[in-house]
Image (cartoon, rainbow, N blue to C red; front, side):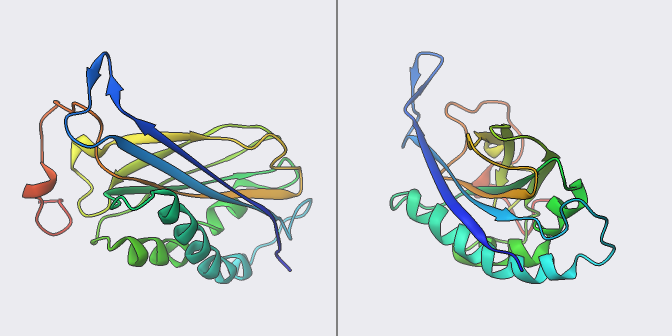
Length: 191
């Protein structure tokens, strides 16, 4: 049985970049995470479907917590990540982040068909993870390529997994690399 030991939510608000003020509203990035036990810690399990099934509700819970941390701002980008403790294997972390976890993230944020970027790794308590962010509506909107760094001082323990859901309220401040603009995206932005 999978159980949550604790939830952690962080938010940051960027008002200037390289000495220049925001070109519009500040950038607000948030991350909600759950520290859960790894039911397969210390052993190989070929069938990870129980984790995938559990992740449906976890995805909804984390998305709701993260969106609340946006403090009324509309989400424009998202990402997901997981860190498995030393007694687990990376595939367990991946099992928490499948489409079943991501579907509620997209639904609650009003996201389009864009792929949700993700990252997984193994780590000890306090290990940081850089969760990649990309537009929730069209993957190739360059202004929204970003990341939020997240860690929890006492997690993951060897038999735990830290599962993360992240959103941002806009693209990077003063983005100027060019490419597809959010307002010009059609469909998934792959065209």
